[in-house]
Image (tube, rainbow, N blue to C red; front, top):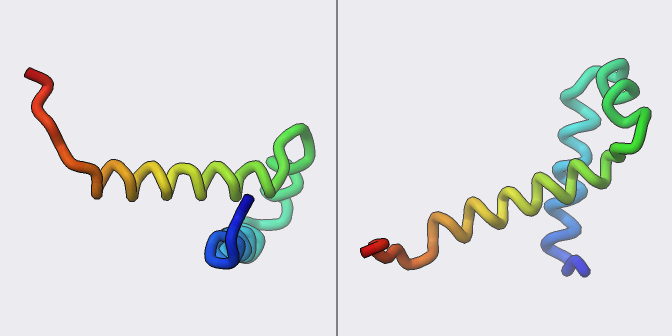
Length: 62
């Protein structure tokens, strides 16, 4: 479930993908089982993971 801010980020990611990548490439990539929504969700997960990894408290493995 996405809140308003997350929906805005997802929309921005979707718009950038559509604007930047050539149409032929988009048709090739999104012509099968993979959808644009799948890519947007994965980018958002990676952004969340990156933010968490950079803000969480670090501890020694010893």
